Amino acid sequence: MAKLRMSEEEFERQYAEAVRRGEERMATEPQAKSVSYDRKTNRLMIEMENGSTFILPCELLQGLAGAAPEDIAEVELLPYGNALHWEKLDADFSVAGLLAGDFGNRAWMAELRRKSESASSDLQMSSTVASGKKGRSAKNGKRCKSA
Image 1 (cartoon, rainbow, N blue to C red):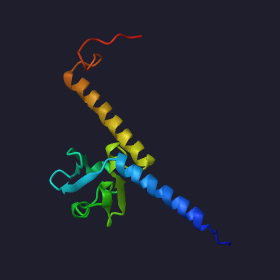
Image 2 (tube, rainbow, N blue to C red):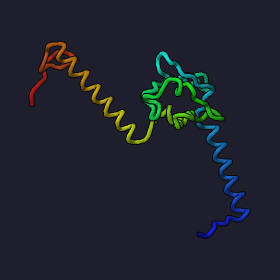
Image 3 (cartoon, rainbow, N blue to C red):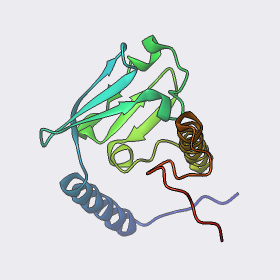
Image 4 (cartoon, rainbow, N blue to C red):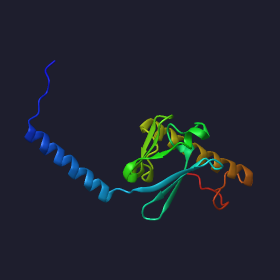
């Protein structure tokens, strides 16, 4: 297999571009100041540089759901405050991703949506049955019109 060679000029160009992109991200992406784990509630608390705090249930995060509290507590805030890392759990999340609601890969997120929709449907059904108004709207108790 042939070795790929890069000229010194090309290396310098790519390096300068990478530095520029890194500086741009540092100026525009949200940054955390600290992160802590509350064992009682099984939640992460991320304090942001702007003074806001983001609280997140650990069971929503791929790789943390079902993990031992002592392992979750070993969360590290990476330099520049842009990511969280768990060495033992082999889990990493960007702060920007968490704020955007990205808690895992596509399959994980699809499963979270499915569970959420199922729970919502179950809640609506139990509300209807509990009110004893089968065939009526759970929202206002009025009869639903048939098509």
